[in-house]
Length: 76
Image (spheres, rainbow, N blue to C red):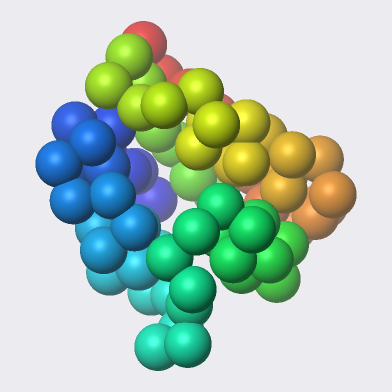
């Protein structure tokens, strides 16, 4: 699955909720994102990473280190 940094910048957590199919109770913050990512089995590729805050990228990286079933790659 690809996620677009430009769309994250524009719509933030609403975009992430939709594209990652996060649950309705998703709290729309980095802690909630981390929790959801740690429960996913997915390969995620981030395009346009220059448009994304470092904190969001770090959250994806940290979750992928914690969750062996989550693969995260940045495409430049």
